Structure formats: structure tokens, C-alpha cells
Length: 125
Length: 104
Image 1 (cartoon, rainbow over the protein chains, first blue to last red):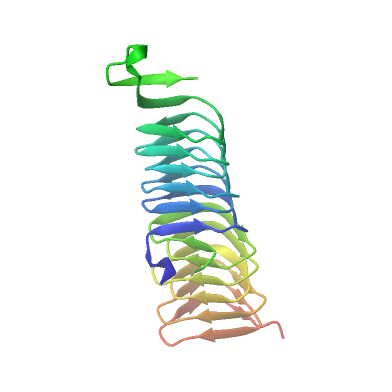
Image 2: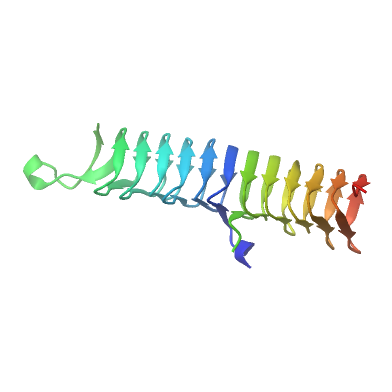
């Protein structure tokens, strides 16, 4: 059965105004206004939109997000995404074609010519 | 696959509105408005008024259910609240406390 998995889907025409919490994954194709705290992964699909402070595992953004993200895994901001907020994660990837306004706080590897010896913790504005 | 699924591990506190169908296997507190069907699965908990098309309940609902179609309280359902619909079934094994309004 489709709903057997510990997964939540906010469909295209669905609008949530309030808090979403849980230990499963969350896929947003519709609209969420409110804080999101999930132990699983969060995906905002193309056309999806969230105005939320997010705490999650891995976060994949293809839609719109207005709010800060704290992820225990990786954050991927993919092409077509429009993101405004600070990202704190193990690592953050920003694809060409994504719009992003905010601060990145993640471990990244500096190229040797910048004096980076392996992994450092850095901030970029 | 249903368009909106509130999975077993998920809790939503607030208002959910949808033009399509909604399946609740997790917990929803607040308000639920759907133009299409609402299904509260076994283990699902809704503490909210439901306003929808066809409503099928196998889980727990505390709140009033209003449907422009039918309401089915299935085996295992536990419903506390008033039910308003044109057609209503209450299965053997369903618990129900509230008023029924079949709008005749």
C-alpha cells in the first residue's frame, strides 16, 4: 500500500499551515507554511514551496524554500530551486541554475592553491 | 498513489487543505479540508474537524466529520464527534460516539 512507508507526501494541491514533525521522510510537492522537523529526509519538489525553518536528515531542494535549514546530512540545492535562508549541514551542494540567498555553514575542501590542507570548517557569504 | 500522504511517523499540527485526496496514517491535529476523499488508516490519528468528499475511517478521529458524499466507519475505527453526510455506514467493530446528520 502506498501509505505503508514511513513517508509523508504533501501533494501538489495541498497546503499545510502548521508544524510538521516526525521520524519519516517528507516530500513536498505543494505548499507548507510552518516549521518542519523530521528525522528522515526532506525533498521539496519542483513546484513545491515551503516557508519553514527546517531540521532534517538529507535535504534536496528543487522548489522554493524560505527559511533556515539544519541538516544532519547533505543539502542539495538543485537547478531551478529558489532558496533564501542559512544552510547548516554536513555538506552543501549548489547546482548551476539554482537561486540561493543566504549563508552556508558546512565542511568543505579548499583547493590546495588556497592553502587548504584537506577538510576545513568554513563559512561563506 | 494518493496525492497527499501523512505517513505513520509524521505529525502535523495545523491546517491541511487539499484539492485532491488525503491519506492519514500518522497524526494530524488541527483542521483537514479536502475536496476529494479522506482516508484515515488503521493507526492513523486525526484530532481535527474533517471537511471532505468521501471519508473512510479505520483509525481514530476526534472531531466532526462533514462530507458531501459518504462516510464509512470501518472495522477498527474509533470516532468521537458528529458525522454529517448523505450516506453513512458504520461497520461491525467500529466505535462511534456522536450524532449522525444525514441531511434529509
